[in-house]
Every structure is written in structure tokens, then in C-alpha cells.
Image (cartoon, rainbow, N blue to C red; front, side, top):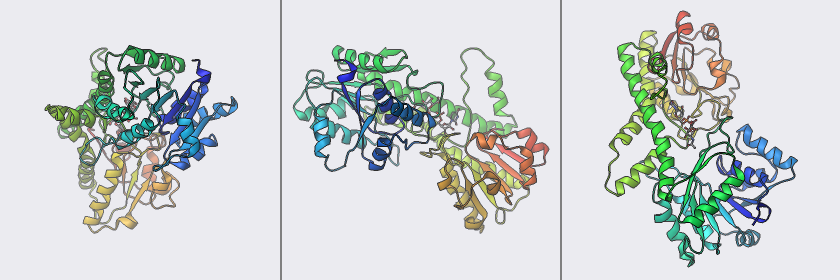
Length: 451
Ligand code: SAJ
């Protein structure tokens, strides 16, 4: 079948599913976007992105210009509209891009994936291809998803095909866009692999690597992100050690980076946030535990990274002493709530934990956090406090202490002399992104993470 008469349904229209749906529609497939949130569906119907990433809005704009469309449906949690039921009976390819978060203690939360599989099961028919893009632990397809789909009476790999092609979106990255990102994939058998390869070859220009099994593809994604988590934990531990030794960890990382091979720089900070890095390791840890293996090293790395918001508060306390400031009387501004610079996403953001630790510290010391504490994130204005805060100048006016938790471009561009003019006495730079030397030369106490 050619693209034009193939029908693709993408389930989950978030930061993974929406750009994918735009690309699939752009490439000429009849593209349906399904999400449980009616507001998201309405905005897409009007070619408006509910995600602030400008590159996604550009994709929707170009769809509109080329008179192409994602046909969006809100998939009500209870029952589907007659019209949607008819459509789902004629889908050739389902692609699942729903969230796979973790619960309180780090256990994988597969509820969204299970819900999507149960919906697809109701409309399963011969020769359909089901692709899972969500991040899942090795074994999820064979142990969780296929048993649900086969309740339909159809057999995986024979009557329908199931594949895994883990998403690799990097929010805000203008170089590695969806079309350019190399992908790995696998399926239950050769036919499934071929169908998956044909599909992705038709929408992306990047290399496609076929792996021998679905489990290998599931493991690949969690491994690549766990690699990042443990390397960040390594430099976060170094930062704490170097603070006691009086060594600037950034300088040492810069030095080590001059080695042209076998060193890959990562950077310490106030914590590890986002939808991938602090989450994915738990998917492998949990599944391996079921088979009797304990990923001690990975769990230790997770614990080191989870400690970093607390370490940031330790650096604040050290700075207060050095600047001879009284925690019971000072005004503090927290700059940044997003999990990383220049995004408006605060999922698993360490800044959120730092915010609550700061409020607790002020209140414990008789300092009214209602009046003496401000939070400002230019990309999360609604979460800033007080609610009428509109500029960073307003946020830092009259405060003695700044705690920076997100390396937004806007914060990095502040001229250090502004801090002096506003009477800042102490800066805790949770992302090591400000000019330490210039700030110290202005007589302001500077505490970084590892510097
Ligand atoms: N972080 C550090 N030190 C570092 C790098 C990151 O503390 O050296 C922190 C960030 O501040 C953030 C968190 O870790 O809080 C995650 O940062 P990230 O750059 O990994 O950003 P993400 O979560 O958007 O990661 C995405 C991931 N993409 C997918 O999972 C498909 C990840 O695999 C990519 O490596 C990452 O983008 C990237 O390379 O930018």
C-alpha cells in the first residue's frame, strides 16, 4: 500500500506523539491523533500546539500551509464516539506514544500503556502493525502488551505485528530533529521488522538500526538514558568532594575534556529532572529485580542525583554563614523552575524540590516565606510567585540571596553588575552557569555546585 492510502493512528499527543503525528501527516499518510485530553485535541484541530516548543508549532503551521491535517480525536476514558470507533476499525498502523512515568518509590507506571493496549485490542484486525514508541522496560511488549492484544483472539506475529521503536526526542534541540535522529527498532519476526523499517524509512532520513529482538530495542532506550544518569551522578559526587577540596570541578571537567578520546563531559548541578533521565533507570532496575538482579550501581547513581537539591540547600547555608546573613530575616529569590534551560517543562524538576526546601527552611527559621520568598521562571510565569512577577528585575529587587536552579538563557545573560545594583549579597548557582569570577569581584558571595 502506498502512503497516501495508509491510515496511521498516533495515541498520545504530547512532546513525542505530536511532532510525530505532524511528520506522518506531512509525509502523506492519513493521520489520526488520539488523546484523552479534549483541550489538546481542540488546539490541534486549530493547528495550535499545546506544547511551547516553537519547532512543534512550525510543524503545524507547515501542515496547514500544505493543506494537510492531523485528524484529532479525544479518546474519552469510558467510551469512544461512534465516529472514532468506525475509524479505529480501519487503521493500518497504531503508534503508541503515551507517558511511562514512575510511581512514588520509582516503580514503573504502565497504566497509560495498558490503557492504550486495551483500546487497540478492541479494534485489532489482521495485518495491522502496532508500534510502541514509549520508553518501556525489557520484556514489556512480550509480558504486558501482547497478552492484552491477544485477548482479541488474534495472534501476535501472525495475525498482527508488534514492534518497538523507542522515541528519542530531545526537547528544544534544533540540530537533532525527529527527521534526523537515528533510530533503533525491532519486531517479533522478519515480516514485522520489514514493515517497521518501511514505515520509518518513509518518514525519517536518519539511519535505522534493526535489532534482533524487541527486548534488545526496549533495553537500548533505558540503557542510553541510564548512561547519562550515572555519568551525571559521577560529576555530582565529584562536585561535593571538590567543594571540600577547594577545586573548581568545571575547570577539571574542561581539563579532562581536552583528552580527544574516552572522556565524555557531563556537568554537576542542583539535580536531574525531566521525563527521561530520572525515570528510565527505574524501568530497568525494577524489571531486573523481578529476575533477581539488583542494579546497586544504578540505584546509587539515582540516589546521588536525588540528593542534589538538598546539597544545593547545604551550599546556601554555607553561603549565608560566609556572607554573614541571618536566615530569619533575609529575602530570597529562586530563579528557574523548569527541569532544564530554555524549556517550559517542570516534570521531575529539581527546582520544584528546592522551592519546597527553601520554604521549609525559611518557615523553620521564623522567616515568613509568604512575604520574603519569590520564585521566577520566565517560561513558567503562571508558576512564578508572587503571581504578578513579570521580570527578573522585579524578582531580585530587594532580595539579599538568589538561588538559581535552571540555566535559562535569560538568567545567563544578566550582567553581574545588576546583582550588585540590586544589593544581592549571596548567589547560589545551582547550574554553574553564572560568571563566578565577576560576581566574586563585585564582593558578592558565590556558591556553585562544585565551584
Ligand atoms: N543534567 C545535568 N548534567 C548534565 C546533563 C543534564 O545535571 O551534564 C540535568 C539537566 O539539567 C536536566 C536533566 O539532567 O535536569 C536531564 O537533562 P537532559 O539534557 O538529559 O534533557 P532531557 O531530559 O530532555 O533528555 C533528553 C533525552 N532524550 C530522550 O530521552 C529521548 C536524553 O536521552 C538526551 O540525552 C538529552 O535529551 C540530550 O542529550 O539533550
